[in-house]
Amino acid sequence: MISKEELICKIEEARDKLNRSIDTEQDSSTVYKRSVELDQLIEQYIVAGY
Image (tube, rainbow, N blue to C red; front, top):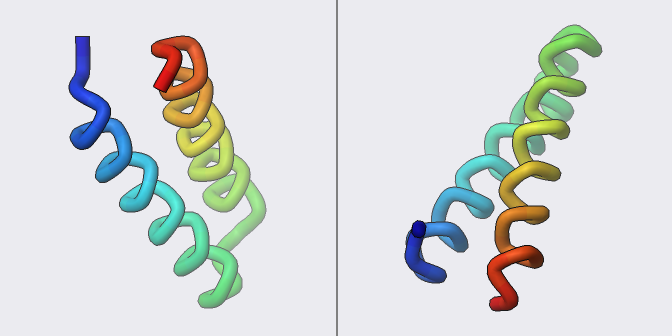
């Protein structure tokens, strides 16, 4: 199982990637993919009970 701190770092990195994709107006499929990746990490955080 991933540690809380490591998961938080991954969430922050995924959020930054998503924000950069939006800011640079990348195609919608890239933005969607990064959004899903972030959602999955957040779900892991919630399920772990942190």
